Structures are given as C-alpha cells and as structure tokens.
Image 1 (cartoon, one colour):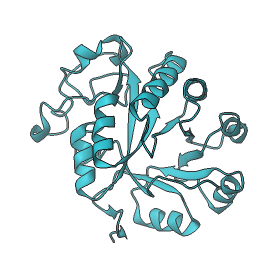
Image 2 (cartoon, one colour; image 1 turned 90 degrees about the vertical axis):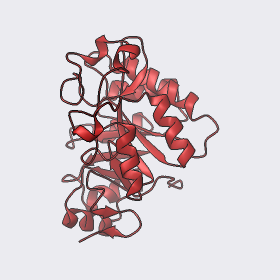
Image 3 (cartoon, rainbow, N blue to C red; image 1 turned 60 degrees about the vertical axis):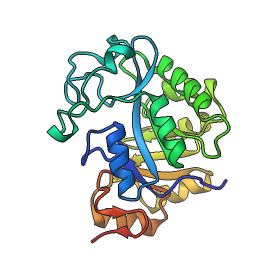
Image 4 (cartoon, helix red, strand yellow; image 1 turned 180 degrees about the vertical axis):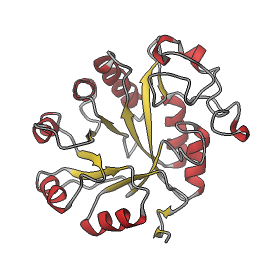
Length: 249
C-alpha cells in the first residue's frame, strides 16, 4: 500500500462533545489535547458555499431553525453555533470549509471531510466540496480525505477532483460495498467500529485499502482495534485517548 499520511487518532467533529461540534472552537479543544487530525461534516448553503454542519436542519446545534440548505452563507454565518452547547461558547459561528482549511494548514493538521449532503443534493455537494477542497489544498503535502455514506456524492467527488483521496463510509457491510469502494477508487473504507474485525482489515489491506473506524469512545474497543492494526480511529473521547500516549485508562 502507498504511505498513509494521516495520524491514527482523529477527533470527531473537532472535539464535538467538549465544545460545539463542527466549529473552530471544537478544533482548538481537540488540538489542546494533542490531536493533529480532525473529522468534520460539510454541506452546501443555498448559494453553494461549503460549510460545516452535521444535520440537515439547524435547530439542534444552532440558533437557527429549518433546513440549512435553504439559507445563504451570509445568513448561516450570522447564526450562533455555540450557545446550544453551553453558555461559554455562545456566539461561536459555523465555519466555512475555507475557514477550516486555513486553520488546519496554518497548524499542520490533517482533515477528514465527510461530505454530508442535504437530501437531494448528493451529486452537487460531492462535486462542489471536492472542487473547493482541491483548490484550498492545492500545493499542500497532505490533502484532505473525502469520505461519505453517499455513493453519488463520492462519484461526483471522483469526477471533480480525482487526485483527492476518498473513503466509503459504512454503517454495515451491505451487499456490493466492496465493489463500490473499488469502483470509486477509494483509498480507505471507514466503518462503524462494531463491524471492523481482523478478517475485514486483512481484506482491505490486501486490496490496498486502509481501514478506519468511527466513533470509538470505549477503551476496550480502542485496544482491540489497535491490536488488529487499524489505520484510523475517529473518537469523541479526546480527553481519554491521547494521540501521543494512547488510551488513558
């Protein structure tokens, strides 16, 4: 397999439990715990700007309401994405992909961008996110890893920016998943941690694919997966798992 440029430990949505998920504040908290690789969710505003948000709607994590994709980036950028987490983060904005790219590059951090389309926007989101990521990381030694549960989004990402590495996200091993990963020229497969075992890791490695898992917060599972030779662990538990030390029992 080609050399893998990404760290083993990846902070989920920044440090999305200790700070407001998918915000610069969360990235900074993750970095303060020693993390040098981060995962985030990216979708499109009404005017086609890639920005960070997990849900299709706004109300769980922001001061807004309704479908996020119906608002322009100017409208989205003025929402409070921190106050629903805790009072100390009130006023924290949602970042654009461009903002997160600048932060990661200035600090030498790696990024896993989960392409998270709003319903019906799968192909457009894959195309725009990949095109923008290729532009933002042009000339950088370590490009972002583009992942998605959406095959259509990954296909559009492949068509728009074939040089960027891709990963197929899987909650379960559905029929045809391996052939889809190969057809999309994926560099990795990222599964729910409960699915990953020695047989699956071996199959992926033989095929030249890396094996990553989400979202591991239990020390016993982290130990199991590291012993099997996992290539990447996405975690919320940035205060319990140390990239420099390992699991803090």
